[in-house]
Length: 290
Image (cartoon, rainbow, N blue to C red; front, top):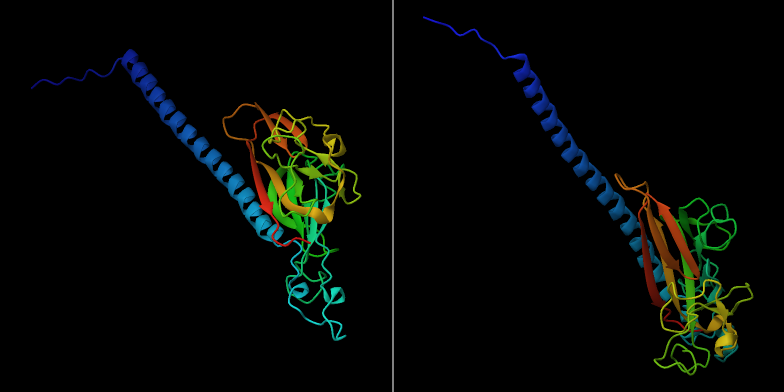
């Protein structure tokens, strides 16, 4: 009987080890890529659900702005034997109609005033997160808040929001339709903001009057008067447009910095980092005109 005691040569061992290392490297690379894709997908889903939930909540409430059932039900509140203006609910409706903050009231419990919980609604950033009040988070992302009654403070509504903005359409002539630019074909609705806090819409956002609020519009804006429309009182607001620009909670895995540009209300926002951002926009019609 013969036996073969010849083993592997050094070269064969080196080749085998090299092939093993290459295989392990390929397996690890595939695993890492899969893990990064899963993490990025999770970040994206969380960001989108965060903004969509906030917008859905805001839509429900903004539709109810100026809701005053007691003003319409024929109750003789002051018991003077007649139903007149003195019997109407005290509901102020839209109060703050700026680009960075929205405040309105409603009488949700039908008690004749707008002083109870969930009857004086404010949306916006806390002053600590947006010191200059431009609607853009100072540190790149912050909590978008909701105040449910005057003086109670903003509570979290959406997390990791880079910027938020509002614009307002109105019915100045009382014909039941949103006002459009006079003399401009196509019935382009005017979307405006109160830029100086006096309660009157005084600046429109679609400065080239093409029906879009986009990169082609002047970021510095224009006045409504320049478009042939006088300043409009906030009680003529009939619709609100909302923008929410969200940012991923963390930089995307395996992603290099990428230039991104967004139009959020009156702001043109540029970013160049590893975070992913999504812009959400919704038009909401208030169902209870003042």
